Length: 388
Image 1 (tube, helix red, strand yellow):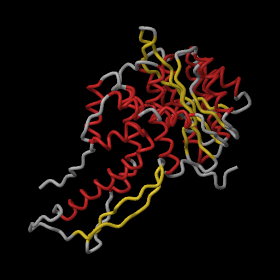
Image 2 (cartoon, helix red, strand yellow):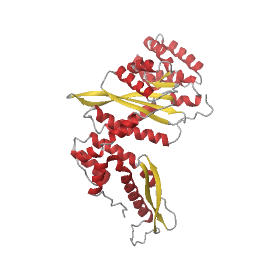
Image 3 (cartoon, helix red, strand yellow):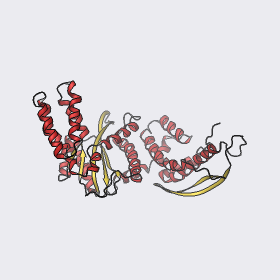
Image 4 (cartoon, helix red, strand yellow):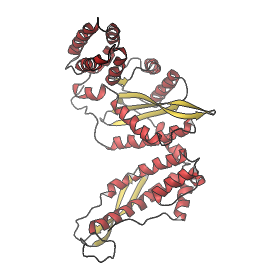
């Protein structure tokens, strides 16, 4: 037997969504959660309401109101009860995350709004009913304001920040170009992560990075003690101009990758990688510098270009040794943003080519806003207790 929810959205409800946009989402979330909890109770009881069956596992006992807080406002749901109190719906907590899915879906629909077929498919999958491209535009009229407000929200003290870039295909003037997507994340005094900002542009990299970093400062970013990033030329110049006095940690993962370009023989690649790991995993900076000197000396004759590159570049990856040992593993690479970029890619690849820069920024902003709020309500990323 299959226990399912026969909930569909009426045309009147869809009109409200279209006319009121995101303001109507709390009501929609309430309806979705109530329907999901009701279906879960039926599955628990192994019987739908009023069904007579030998497999029944108890009896329904009405509903209990519960008010929960979401980003879109407080909502009151009806939690299904059973007589023996053996049931509590897991989908209540899971359902609260539906607002994230809805916001993301609205962004996707807006990006893909040029295709009525795609809009129809998305809305049918989400709600069991399709709406027109015109309704989608109305429903997302407030979305850009919501995302813009999030991108420009005041910041504050973030002790560690990470910077990274990725690229997306965008149509511009009849041509397909690569747009740079810049992302900044940070760890606040509470030890939790947040996405500090995102920017998309087809412009020159150093100018784009400088404007982006300056915008973080203008929004109140302060208290930065360390910046972790790769050594992109444009980023490096912009970082020095905006955050010149702040220590910089060059991403050790990217250093490992960069080193391979200077290895003269493929057979040496794994050995070089192991030598670099030994440097980076040293228990102290003094030992790391000692290992590095030994490694440079090791390759001076067999791979002189590699030895010269190591001497000039690897020390940039050792800044992290000046920070608390319990923080070092989190700070020595941009792996946190690399994972985030992979998640972004999973969402943007369905679009393939964005119709314009604004649509690219919209979709990525929607995802990052949800991810940042997930981080803020989750566990600490680092603990500053006992560290100076």
